[in-house]
Length: 205
Ligand code: ATP
Image 1 (cartoon, rainbow, N blue to C red):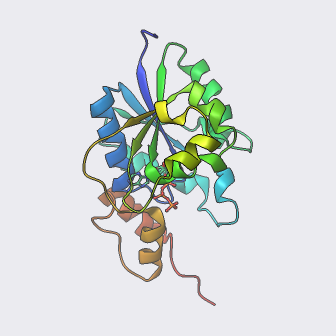
Image 2: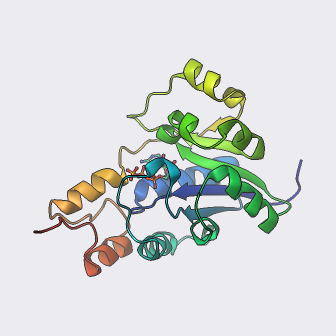
């Protein structure tokens, strides 16, 4: 057992970051006694190929604004600064080099746990870290199918218990595209940046 820090890893597209991400990070920090949570914007997530993703420079700014009031939350650009492909299984060794004594928990919403079989080498991933999962109401986990695809998964998960938020970046992007503001769906500083830079607007012409 490592005597080092306990670190949560929250990788995501963060397009944009919202209260669901911050709640997942804070719940994990409290329940697992984490020293900090690294927010790791991904460059181009391999499983989201095909969807247009906002420039990483904007997403980095959005994440820094989202976490600016919490000293336990840290922006980490290791993933988006490296060349593709951006798989988590190849990211973990880089983080282990940066934090040699640390124990890692990968923080996931239930949808990501459900979709784990689509990730690169998930069976190896769960030997590199534990998973801390907060259910998402809309994501149904079929355990037998998941355990067949990812042997060892059943004992790799620490469940986070608490209220769940049915909020996604997809829903927020759709809301903004309709011309609304995202006030109260994400931190004010994030909403202001989105307005200032006219992100997530409907394409005209
Ligand atoms: P999108 O709708 O664009 O797919 P998202 O809101 O799911 O985005 P991501 O950046 O893809 O956000 O998510 C990063 C991680 O945060 C994923 O593991 C995801 O499951 C988790 N997450 C996002 N929103 C929530 C939420 N409301 N509750 C729990 N986990 C969440």
